Image 1: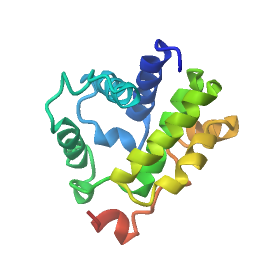
Image 2: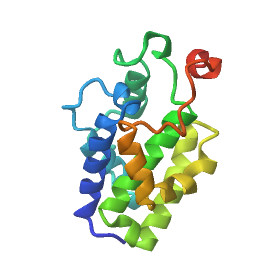
Image 3: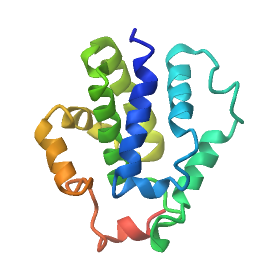
Length: 173
């Protein structure tokens, strides 16, 4: 229900954004790994039930990958080991939907509606407070002013970042 050649482009575009984001790039220690390919295969498998991801990855790959991100040495020492929080997941969703939009996938309503529900379902695994922000995150990139402001702010989403003085942000695992 979407042009298959756009899907890998979307995921590659998403990771280009992650690698440049002030906040999220810290979760990725090695940018040379095939992050985009792996995520594209995982999403495609969930969409089609074809085992394109599970046939190539060990069963605990997602868990190990996310633990690696949580303990990334690029993160501030006080945050190493901390699981994804609301600011992380809201920024992640905005960048993902922006990548989908710039690759034309938001123009395919049957795909984009499915994709929003898909993200809403799985983001809950990482942060239980995140699902209500899915629609807002999807709409964020529809406004060019939001993207302009994000770029002007040095690729930092200041409106979703929790301040360093917030103990939830530093101490909660």
